[in-house]
Image 1 (cartoon, rainbow, N blue to C red):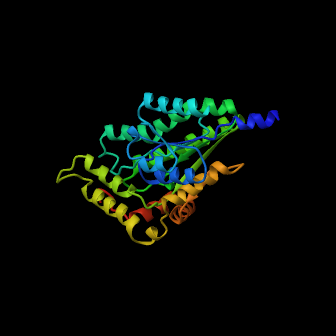
Image 2: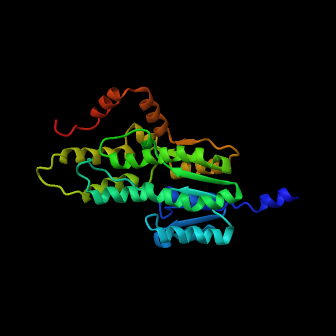
Image 3: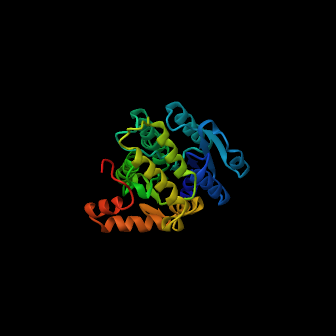
Length: 291
């Protein structure tokens, strides 16, 4: 009886970041429909009316703001006792040559994709440790294991997520907390257009040495999602949601879940190719600046 009472006290409430669109939104809907208690978040809790109608609780959460993160976690703890499942989904991509992207945009990218993920994880871990159960699901990307030209800063954030997740998985396993990385490939959302749109933040002049390169990256990014062989291997946001559900439901979740045919194909290809061979492959699809 005592053991049953202890199990009954374990919170499995789900806190998801970045639910205003795309993967976060669909994951919140999917998990709520499956019976999970879902706290869906976005900055200002804007645009979450349909998630509230689906049974989610909407909270304001800005992963670049310490007070906002603490307030959201405190509210879940007040209602549930602890955050049982944290899904670090908030993030975005921007494209541009390393030299060309302004440093304020670089810092903003890391603040959202890496530092916010880390701080929110720090805030939920005490409750997970106290109840000796928890799941931290970090949305990485196939881009956490390979790098495409023009996406260096985005890839850097996802490589960081991979490394942080590997370290954290070892550190918290003994407390009953599992850490899972989800690695989507091409997913049909507004991701590609947002990445290309960020290029406009860098100053452009007629003699810009990266101008042709940026134009090619923009075309290639959009085309990859809209046509060609990789587009046919793209997944849907619900595919990611199902992988996340599997990860938080499994008694012993895998360390990584790869989602979509495009991710499986490209990650296999990258693993087989040397750095020189991978560079040759990239040069066949992107112009090299300066050549």
